[in-house]
Every structure is written in structure tokens, then in C-alpha cells.
Amino acid sequence: MDEVVRCPYCVSGEEFKPMVSHVDGTFICARCGHTTRPKDEKYECRCSRCVELQRITA
Ligand SMILES: [Zn+2]
Ligand SMILES: [Zn+2]
Image 1 (tube, rainbow, N blue to C red):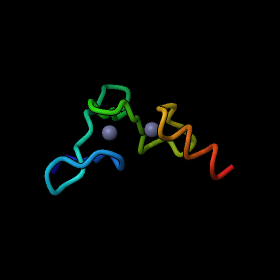
Image 2 (image 1 turned 90 degrees about the horizontal axis):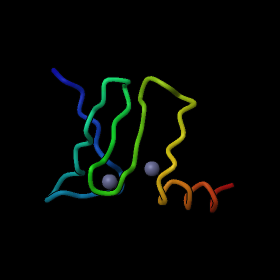
Image 3 (image 1 turned 30 degrees about the vertical axis):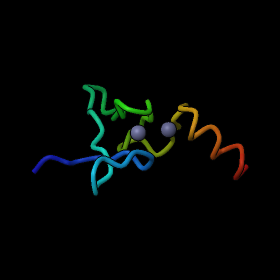
């Protein structure tokens, strides 16, 4: 069964929008540009929403 990674920011219908996987293990949301890399704990997304979140919680 394939792992489905969903964007925490984008809702598609009643579910969060599935993100597109890339060969390097990064998942990218086609709608908002959010990225994540489940295998890399240190990976930080640079999309505007994550930057804003980091700014608030820092
Ligand atoms: Zn998104
Ligand atoms: Zn992001």
C-alpha cells in the first residue's frame, strides 16, 4: 500500500489534499507549494504558511 501524505493546509472535499511525491523523497502540495520529507526529520519547508508558523512559534 502506498503511503499517502496529505497537505495540512489544503482541504479537498472532506479530506486533506494528497501531496505529490518526488523521486528524492520530498512531497509537494500542488495547490499551496507546501513541501515535506517524511524520512528527514530535519527537513524544513519554506512555503509561506510554514514560514509564518515558525515566525509565530519561535
Ligand atoms: Zn497545500
Ligand atoms: Zn510548508
